[in-house]
Image 1 (tube, rainbow, N blue to C red):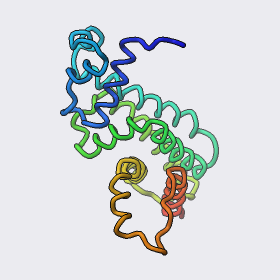
Image 2 (image 1 turned 90 degrees about the vertical axis):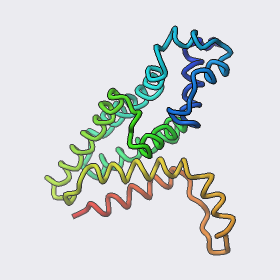
Image 3 (image 1 turned 90 degrees about the horizontal axis):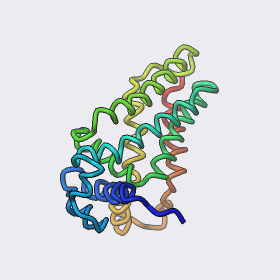
Image 4 (image 1 turned 180 degrees about the horizontal axis):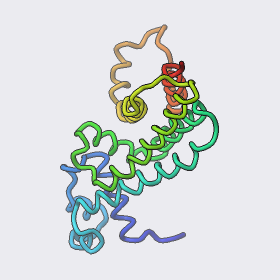
Length: 202
């Protein structure tokens, strides 16, 4: 079994802390304690909290951008948009801590998001614009603002994950015989995809 390096351990606990506490309330002292190391040991790998935060989230934005670019080039505009939404959704499913961090960034106006992460996120927007433009040219899609479509995708999927505890509390008061069982995340992705595409069709 491969031993986890000290740098990987720091990143793991930093990811957990940023997702639970946000950037402002995450303390390097607490991360060092979780890793059973000293605070200066963190500075050996990362010059400050901002550098550590960048190391935690920027590779995630790069990974999802690359995956979207690779998997939304082929097919008609509808198929490409379905793939776009599916990839974004499945990436958030498999990265719950990133999902929580991303949701926090959306909620606070992206005030702590590093420029490099914004640049990587823009790659996904450019691909979405390409899909929508091709759909308009093919007279498949009506013209809609790309950022509106992106926000529908991102806020729906991040909110679904992060609001689960609240939904569970609410369900205690509204549950009855007609209440439908809560759909899983994959069903949410499919339903969202169908609604967005239906709204775009000419």
